[in-house]
Amino acid sequence: MTGLDQARFREVLGHFATGITIVTANEEGVPVGFSCQSFAALSLDPPMVLLAPAKSSTSWPRIAQAGAFCVNILGEHQEAVCRAFAVSGGDKFDGVDWTPGVTGAPILAGSLAHVECTLEAIYEGGDHELVTGLVVSMGSSDGTPLLFYRSGFGRFVS
Picture 1 (spheres, one colour):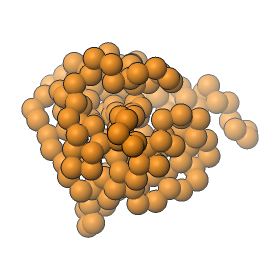
Picture 2 (cartoon, one colour; picture 1 turned 90 degrees about the horizontal axis):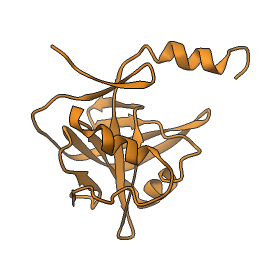
Picture 3 (cartoon, rainbow, N blue to C red; picture 1 turned 90 degrees about the vertical axis):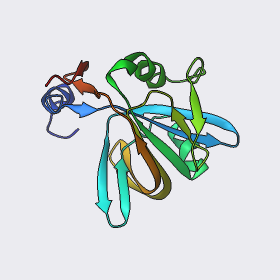
Picture 4 (cartoon, rainbow, N blue to C red; picture 1 turned 120 degrees about the horizontal axis):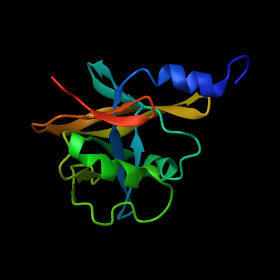
């Protein structure tokens, strides 16, 4: 990073609390996924979302190849699931209940909400890619979100 200290950049931006998601897909009959905090609504008409996977991700290329994905928005009780999907390699779906959505992408049991998309476009974004998805299905349930703040997990308190 030219002119800026990476550790300081991470520290300052860590003051922005985000929700946590797990992005999943079905790649030729095999479920694949990764934890992602860089997720946002992009457009109402047409309904689109935006996410930003790291270029170093080993899961993202497999999801991109699938052409469709599901963004599972995690509830406060799913910290262990988030941690399992944040590591590289291994069977991230071991012990995780899920059902296939309309695109075939896994919808994780217990998620606060899910948004299924077809892959629209991928743009360069430094050490990440900016990905847009066209929403084709979605659902939600009651609960409270799992939050990420200053490099740690937290919960929403009203």
